[in-house]
Length: 167
Image (cartoon, rainbow, N blue to C red; front, side, top):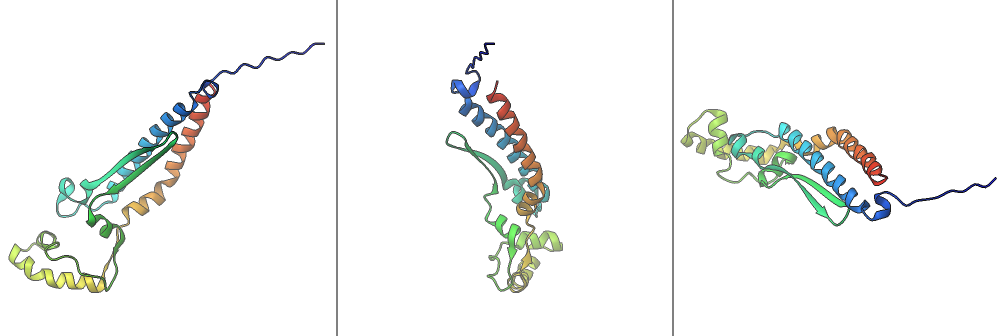
């Protein structure tokens, strides 16, 4: 009995297309994950007195950055300095909020005019400096609660990559 086997080198892994296939799939799933996290974080972000169009909510954005052949990075963040304060809160005994930063908030939340808001501002700034306040942790909580969904997205992409490389 004569047994013969022939091995042929077919598929993207053998013809040099594997890195491009991997990069394309990683970019796709990273865009999907970044957009998903951005949408979920925005649900938890306080609208504030400027509304959705001009406040903190409007500064939350996701971005995908390509780093090399197969390394892709997704970031969801805010450019607003106020964003970190809302996320983490303010510890008791820290510096007071900047003068003038709370005027619009006082007017809207307390229903007072600009003159009355100016009088109340000192007291409110002092209390925030003394007592602090808890952060909303919209980025941290969203990441923790949505991590299993993100993980499934990447696991599915891994199977897709393996299938496409072997085509």
